[in-house]
Amino acid sequence: MKDFATRCNKIFSQAVVDYHINDNVDTPINNHFEPQTIENLLYLKCWIDTVQWHLEDIIRDPQIDPVEALAIKRRIDKSNQDRTDLVERIDSYFYEKYSTIQPQANAKINTESPAWAIDRLSILNVKIYHMQVEVDRKDVSAEQHDSVVKKLNVLLEQQVDLTTSITQLLDDYAKGERVMKVYKQMKMYNDPALNPVLYQNQK
Image (cartoon, rainbow, N blue to C red; front, side):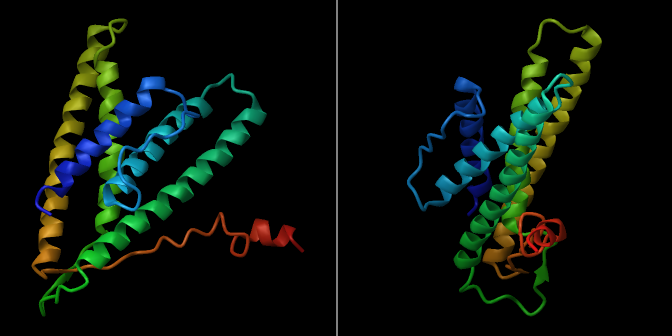
């Protein structure tokens, strides 16, 4: 798994670029990778993140129609649930992969699972793409240009650090130095049996 995080960045970058061919939140996904593969899940993950990025932009339009805004908010809620479900599927891949590894007696537990770190890496790739767009703008002041260049450089450094951290984490799992666990998010607000607003309205 030495190059796994680097491969993630390549897949995420491809997904972001593919989305912007049409740059429309309703564009159907064209996943290049075989179904049931980890690459397919990674591409889908970043596609969801990219679409949601643009939905978040749209809903902040001060002139947006309230009815449309509510519809987009509902869509963002569903996207967040899809994202969470997908992260847990990716974690299941790692859990199975390392299931035969016997943890060492002093093995540590990480604060987050691999897939949630990969989730952050996916979103970071989306941020980098859009910050580069801002760097390339010609209609801004030199001051604003310098500001976004600095922000882009910070994001790129974070990408290197996070890629390295994920690589080290997977290596620790492979050596039994950390215990692989899947942390379920247990989202409640979309569950009609657990959200009081929803289940009280069913009475």
